[in-house]
Image 1 (tube, rainbow, N blue to C red):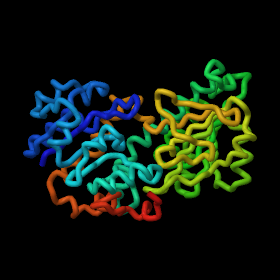
Image 2 (cartoon, rainbow, N blue to C red; image 1 turned 30 degrees about the horizontal axis):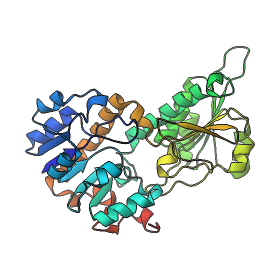
Image 3 (spheres, one colour; image 1 turned 90 degrees about the horizontal axis):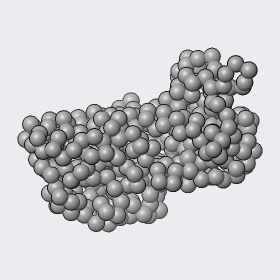
Length: 355
């Protein structure tokens, strides 16, 4: 099969879907692999690293998409990609269509088959292709949130972990999955007091096991409102597979927070879980609303492309191999990952979308 890896064009996105070693594996299996010129540069992989392993270099996006049957990229297609996509393309990438009705309509009009990384689902409900980027986003959320607490950044001027004679900072996390769990772990290891809201008892236990400075609570509305009032950083990391994220923090709750506090919405790719969330980019990553700094970049892991590209490639390569083999319909996990096909919405979480 002819596999195409386009250059990512989302604002300040540095990832590449497949690193050279992975492409070499596909070439050895008899596939024809094409990559757009300079697609791997920001991840530390020049064109020569690919061509030395038998990968062919396409001079531009038009040439890349013309050659490809299977298109493997990281982020959802935007205008520069959409004009090149065809009905016969098999598209494999993050799509997050629940928050993108316009993109969904475009993909339906094109008629291609789109399988989303974030909805490839195992029998036990695990999401193996979302997990590595969730880990990275969870850690970035705390790193960035800590920086945004600094007074020159508009924050309240608080050192998150505190020190003898001062109070510790407080972090509130919604969701104890891969993203939220990593946010909680990093915040706790830095000395902050951490409150994690979660509904699953097993995940609550995992959070409590992080240390004596971590508390796990059920998200009763009154308890959420109380804990937010004294929070320094709030991380939103709730997920319903393939669906729009539920709203867990209202504007009135945010109004009651201390000025200079920070909200980090990792759920922004699925529409966000705070009422005041609106998507941002790495070029303009923050905004202030109700006196609170909001960070809601839709491609957080794109800021560390060397790490992210290696992690996502290791996760997706076995699935790319199945797709390229032509017998992928035998894989229940990949079939569950189909979002759109032949002009139809396929994934159950998207069935009620208005597009």
